[in-house]
Length: 116
Length: 112
Image (cartoon, rainbow over all chains, first blue to last red; front, side, top):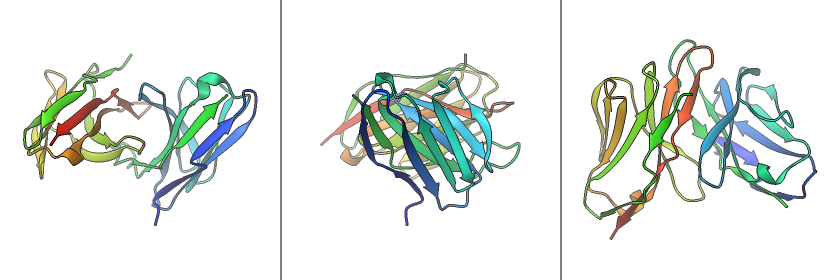
């Protein structure tokens, strides 16, 4: 069974288009994340949700909008795609105890987004 | 600006040798430290975490933490070609914006 799954695995699209990436975890975790890994391999957090509530919202263009319909799902919608959005986007989840350090983050396989 | 720094490498070691990967961090308030491994084209996966000063061993892996020097390292004994990957150091910052700050990673190549 796949613990954290993402769809699609590859996404090639034109500038200006709108696209979505879906993420689901079956680990029963309360916290989910979206990361962007650029061509230099730098892993940068974009958003974090805990029990469907947004808890981390880094300096990300408002063209990026996360949505968490339930605690097992965290989707990422991107409007008006730009060349600089090309990267690998990872979804992750963890079971964080309130007030405690984070538990292990389990990553999805990644979505490689290419904007032409 | 909280930062986590790693030597990007590549670090090249012969099979059977000890690989030493280093990481420094800027915020003394950091509480927890993680080492993740990422194979090319794959997602990161946790190797070890360490919270207290000193050494923590798990099989061929040893994490070392020195909070006074703001330094955390990962030693891999008896390195194998299958250990060839990028090793990411991540540091946890508590407070209002609890999150992991990630280093750029060190690329390790173990040569048969």
